[in-house]
Amino acid sequence: MFDKEDIRQIESRGSSVATVQSQVELFRKGFPWMKIIAPATPGNGICVLDDAAAEKAAEYYAGAEIAGKCKFVPASGAASRMFKDLFSGLDTLKSGKDVPADSPAARFAAEIARFAFYDKELFGEPEDTMQSRMKILSRTLTGEGLDYGSKPKGVLKFHRYPDGEVRTAFAEHLVEAQDYMRNPDGTANVVVTISPEHRQLFEDAFAAVKDVYEKRYGVKYNVTFTYQDKATDTVAVDAENKPFRTDDGRLLFRPAGHGALIYNLNNLKEEVVSIKNIDNVANERFLPVTAKYKKVLLGKAVELRDKIFGYLKELDAVTGEGMSQALPPYIPSLTQRYDDKYMTPEVQNLCNDIEEFLLKELCIRMPYAGDCKTRVRKLREKLDRPIRVCGMVKNQGEPGGGPFIIQEKDGSTSLQILEGAQINKEDSQAMAALSAATHFNPVDIVCCLHNYKGESFDLLKHVDHETGFISSKSYQGRELKALELPGLWNGSMSDWNTLFVEVPLETFNPVKVVLDLLRPAHQS
Image 1: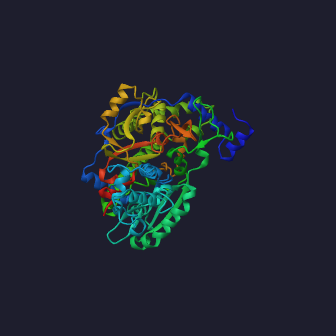
Image 2: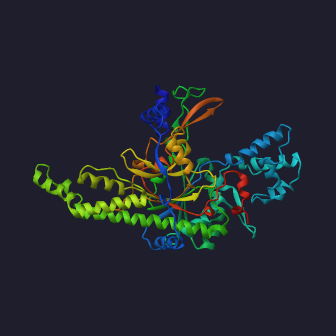
Image 3: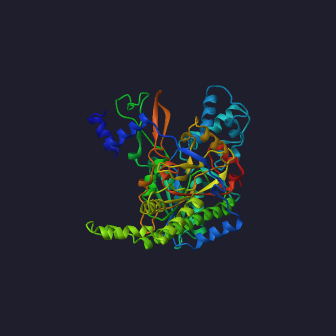
């Protein structure tokens, strides 16, 4: 399949022939559908807290011992999709035709003065003419002005305040971080995933506010910029599932989606990590509600951590963890005596408690284990995993993965965030579950990445590699198929202990298209 030049190309990217061959095989065999049991809903997979319970969770976070924490912000994409409608409108105007008055391009031009990046000298006063619209669109999107069409969302000016201060999306994340992710020593760790070509833009954006914010909020920022590793790019194939080749005969590799960021997450040393997309920020007047519910999620995460750690330590105590490995295999009487420990009432009562906890709190229904020793082993495996607590908002038609209860390969059930591409449209039960879904995940997630012994989990061991995506793309007019790795909050976290918690819709304020910046959460 691959010649010597192909092998050099593959290895120069930090990948291997075996990895690329396995990717091609995935195109050929496809991905299995998830077996959906039911949508996760309030009382059946989604935890709904009243004010007292929310306050209790936030207080638990305030008093918890945590071995370091940081805010993780995926921000590697360019803002081109945010301006897709404007590019289309600009092309129409350049062709000599006007855009409809109700089109996104016309609405944007008419409302230009309401955007944080408006500058009268650059844009002039908006007028109801083709020439004015052309000028506004061109000076927003191209190098003639702001060149926003080629810049990342993180460095775009999102908000203007009454005192004249203007903030980028990245700046708003810094403001959030000093509130709910501050360490006891006054530092706030922020890890931002970016594209290498955008590094200087982000460094300049940070330098512009660092001193001001550190003085204003009494914080010390530790900001780290990381890249999506080229080794995680996946090979493209043609319609016959053969490696796609460019005109010069080279293999074509493509970024593998946000699932590749599990490698970045795996490199973090902090115990508790908060994940939130770069475009999901709001005007600072929304910070009280945003921070409150982030602290609620953080509190539920460390509370869940402590419960699970407690059960694991109890299992160690009642089963004599490690004894079986130390026993000589040629003394069967001692080995049998050790195995008998799994059948004591103390051990079985603890197993009953754990199974009840897993079902009640995490919707994990354990299959029949067969014998007591296997039962303990399987329960230990379910407990000793990374933890994520995901905020869920009521479904208002916004984009986002949905929460479901699914059946795993081992027969157990679990809570998962599924995208539409993972749901079999020909499965009536799956479609019924989809139509009955009430919430979606806005990528508002808190993770606990250390085990009960204080060691970092190897997150790569908890990825379900059968939950990727295949999509249709094109390259220079030629059709191809692209492979995305299991999504960061989908398949890459499939084998995590998961809790869904309802949060208010006010905490979700994404900017998917530029006109979203006209919503109240982004206006002063």
